[in-house]
Structures are given as C-alpha cells and as structure tokens.
Image (cartoon, rainbow, N blue to C red; front, top):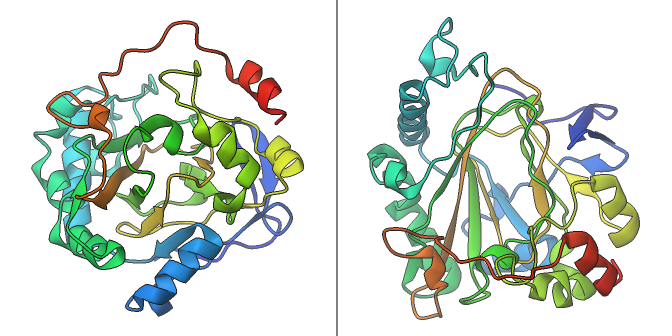
Length: 300
C-alpha cells in the first residue's frame, strides 16, 4: 500500500504550474479519529472546509465500481490494447471519456456505491434528517495532461439549497502523478470570494466556471495554501459548495478514475437542473461574460 506521506520538496503541477510540498502545497489532515463524533465533524468542516475520511467505502465495492468504468473505456477503444484492461492504461490516442447519464445508468456496481446505505446513512446523521442525492452523477476518467481548474461547486449547482455537499471518491489507488484532488483548506471562509464569484452561476453569468487555472496566482491574491495527497480507493473527501478545489495534472500513463457526487437534506430546495433522466441539460444564457471580465468586475 502506498504511503500517504509526501516528502517536503516533492514537486507537482497544476495546469503546468509547479507547486512544491512544504512550501505552497501541504498534506491534509484526515478526520478518521473523529469519524463517529458528529459535533467534532461539524467543527472540523467549519474550520478546514473539508473532511478527509480514509477507507470510507468497502474496497471491494469500490473496485467493482472501477470495473464498470474500465469496461466502458475498453468498449470505447480508449485503453491501451497492449496492457491488461484492469490496469487502466491510456490508449495511444490519449483520448478523454465523457460519461453521460445514459451510460452511467447501466453502471450498476458504480451506482451501488454512490447511492449506498453507507453514504446515505452518514449524511442522515451529519445533516440530521432524511437525505437525497442528486440524480446527476459524475464518474471521471481523466486522461494524461488533464487537470481541473480551481472552482467553487456552487457556481455549477447553486439553484437549490446551499447546504449541498460534495463527496469526492477515488475509484483506484491514486498517486500524485495521476492527478489527485487539490484544494485550499479554509477557503470556505473567504467572505469576499463567496459574495462575488460564489454568488455567480456558470450557466447564466459566466462562459466558464473555473476561477483560475493558475494555483500560484490564487496564493498571491487570496492568501491560500494548497493541499493534496495520494489517495486509496474508497477514501472520501467531503466538502461544501464554497470550497476552492481543482486537481493536479495527470502525468501518468493511466486514467485517473474518481467520482464526485452531491448530497443534501430531502426537505431543502433541490437544483432541478441536476435531476431527472437527463440531468444538466441546462440552456446557456446569452451574453455571458468571460472569467477575466467577471474577475475584473469583482476585483479578484
């Protein structure tokens, strides 16, 4: 099993921008020591903006979900034909995969994980009542050279309750080289960012939702630090809608397999754009602004 400790001086990149562990990116703390203490979990997510719970899911269930995605990638001819399919080696064309709802509904092992009693029971305790998960599911197969820019989730799914929670889960043992989740602890408390960027809607206001693809400029502008770590299949990263995150570059020869999904109280308003048999079929408003234009307006 790979080490979860990252040595100071280890260098990683995010959209080609270099980050150095011990200088501007750090190893996060996990919450396994308080996992059965709901008040402590609430205090921790209020303080840090996230909960990292190692080995949250049953590993066998996660590996079955992984097999669902690899089977689809194989059917699409996206895997290296000279490597065993179960290794998830990227094919010579290095193509990305879009896993739409009509594909996901047939990934039964995957759906058993993200709709499981394990995760629903956790949120019923955490939120104090019956919960639901958005119909829109987000399994990811991230190719080599790809990363995700820094963003708040609220700009993509903020038309319902703001007390909506993301659960990001690796569907494989992920090294840093595979492009792990990267995030800014405490970024949930950036009030000026919440009032400006966090109040926007990527479908109505902006031509894109990512605040920036340069993690170094956000360190200077927002006074944040980055965090990332290797992950094990079945770890869970839980955070709210106002938490700045993205991902490192995948510089490996394997797809980074992960999933991120949303959970909330059933009694709260739901962003209906992400519900139903064809979620996220959201018309894009005309005359939206570029992120550069919006940032100039916000002074960010």
